Length: 129
Image 1 (cartoon, rainbow, N blue to C red):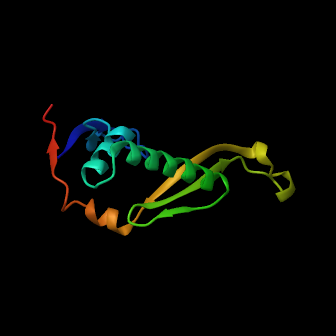
Image 2: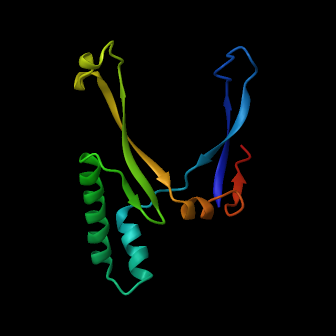
């Protein structure tokens, strides 16, 4: 079950408008690599330590592939890719690495993941406070 908090927010396009309440997901904890390795090992014949090592290796290789400018597609999970934010330059020749201000990793979930996490498959509990 996904817990929902009620959060009051202003309208960013009209700060004079009345504030409204919006739903915001309240996380109920974190799952780390050790927990994932434990879960995977209990669903297979592979030992927990081996699962952990494979997951760490996967992460390492995703990072390396992204650093090479590649998009990383993991079937049934999703796609990772990099994007940047930069300051504008008047001409192509004036655009250099110093114009780049931030680097972001984007994740686009695969259809299977999206289909398994939709409004019809998730139960919500709205926090009454």
